[in-house]
Amino acid sequence: MLEKWLTANGFAFTTLEVDEDPAALEAMNELTGGRPSGVPFTAIETGEGDDKKVTTILGYDVPKFKQVLGVGMNADHAAAA
Image (cartoon, rainbow, N blue to C red):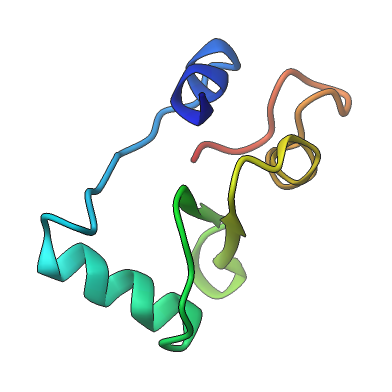
């Protein structure tokens, strides 16, 4: 469902299978501080250099995705996932 929404809104993304890829699981644990989480778990990088920011979203939270990615705000989208 999330992949379909991202594709429909023109965002590129990479899917990592944390149950099959130990490095992906480690990266998710670093982003969550090792706290238990679930899937889908999304990390969105925006900005560059000193302005680079990573926002994490747990679940299929469309309003949060729209806010972070700028969907429906003066342009179709403002950042890529």
